[in-house]
Length: 259
Image 1 (cartoon, rainbow, N blue to C red):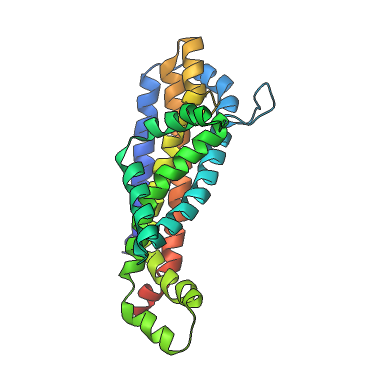
Image 2 (image 1 turned 90 degrees about the vertical axis):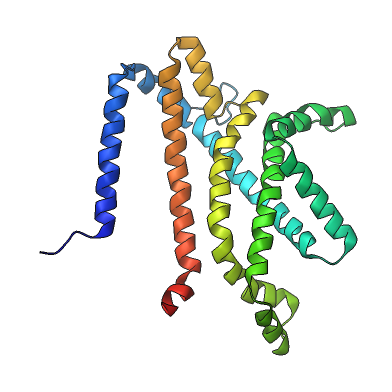
């Protein structure tokens, strides 16, 4: 008799666990009519009174923009860490040390409250993205540096012997091999960023966590609102995990072929 494939067994386990989790939610006596009423706002299907996005949509916008900016910052910092220029190396290590050594919440408050003292006034949206980008850029820089360092030096030397320039070597030789080591930890960092984006709620942005707490206070049904937000965060995280797995398979094709 043919045994069911591994993926089918895994999906069966997931289905059973989801059913058990759902049954546990029902036993809590939650007000599901209230959840249905507030869900469109939490998902971001409705705009704020001033016409701006809110809820999960705003959370995704903040996360995606912060991911792009943090990647740029991380690449520049990683190159600085690998540079033999003392100024570039010093700036990169100082930046990474500061933003990895201080809490993200403190950084959010400093950027939002302290920068205006120097004449630089930023909106809550911009401040949140800047804080997330600088914080996660410092962590991603080490991941990228380690990925670049994992590529054997002989491959660069062979490419140089063929007459390739440094730019082409970095793009065609180093980057594809380094990505296999960069993507798994970077994917985990981006999932953390998605959840840490809730910290921008302290600046009055109507993102998912802000709405969950606001609706909880106004209706006295904290459990319904917080569990709804948790499920939405989980679904968004699953989406990022799927993207991460596809990228891992894409950049791991050469290794899979060798096996």
